[in-house]
Image 1 (spheres, rainbow, N blue to C red):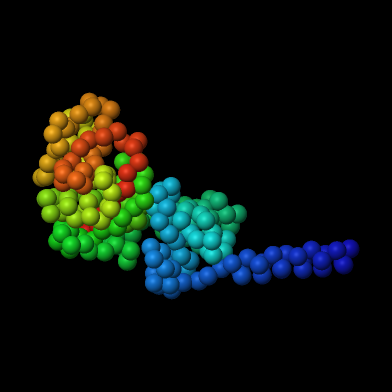
Image 2: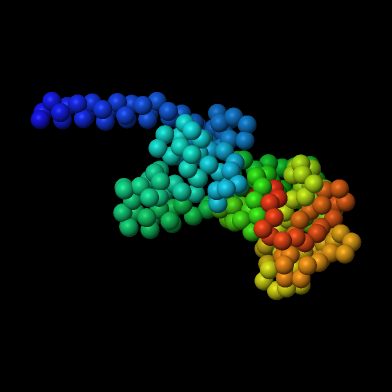
Length: 229
């Protein structure tokens, strides 16, 4: 029996050694390569539009490998980790609330609004992308073009023919508001827009014409988070 126990322990330790061998700890974003972010738990994450947080840990994140960053608790483990008691989970929820301020993976862009900084997101539907922006920080939202210069700057950053902006009439059909709940000061509609009645509640930027067009929210477009320092 003792021999069997020692063998079992040996295998367990070997498994742990292998796990640690797949870990790569970071201390800054530059150590994660292009597009990577060094998260507070010391592992690199990368853009992933399928995650609500917009980020997923890489293969070398040990026990957190390939998990969405929003699925990590205050103790540094997955939210469904056995270590999380009901009390721990409640504490984690408070700890993991998005912070204020603009994270280091946001940057100023030529033509951007004042001191605002921006971050490109992978393609997703019109509603989920705003949720991703808010999940990164309470100071961010799906970008709202305030003038032609900013709209063109967002188009350049998007690198796409069409991209989501933070304007919608989902709450009150026909009344377009920003995702901040304000009346837009700049609405350069493309000819014939807005169209589609209650079927097209989200708004996209049209790169070629520097105009806006309303579209079904379930369409896949890239989006840009805008953060106010």
